[in-house]
Amino acid sequence: MSVPGPYQAAPGPSSAPTAPPSYEETVAVNGYYPTPPAPVPGPTTGLVAGPDGKGMSPPSYYTQPVPVPNANAIAVQTVYVQQPVTFFDRPVQMCCPSCSKMIVTQLSYNAGALTWLSCGSLCLLGCVAGCCFIPFCVDALQDVDHYCPNCKALLGTYKRL
Image 1 (tube, one colour):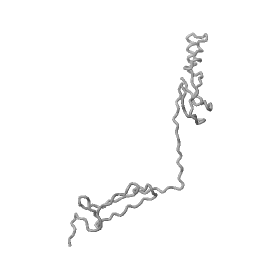
Image 2: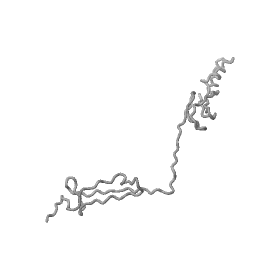
Image 3: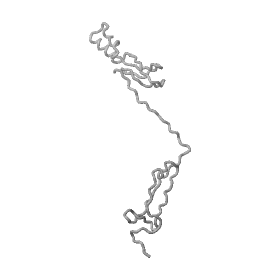
């Protein structure tokens, strides 16, 4: 009767190592509880023959526990954040926050700080015969209000100064 050497596997069932568990088996994606790994068949000495014929200990597998869903879980609410709209002296295409429709804003021109400063400057230069009121007729010197054409709500203002 021969005794196996220190580098030989003991006779018995197959001493080939088994494949590690898949990702789903490890983290139990499809189930609530992890499944334990299958027992690794091996010799009674605890050594498994490696690819080079040397003995090695069987690999140990760990499973991560998956939290049990709570019956009192809070529902998740999706929030959509609309980017702020920057108003200039041109019409803007946007979604109206009042009527929730896609619109192109209507413009309205009003006298603002630049209009009054221009008027005062022309008065100081000697244009007092009515020429100092020209800035009130020039849209490029006035502030711009943006309105919704559908619900007539004021959406924003562009101030020149």
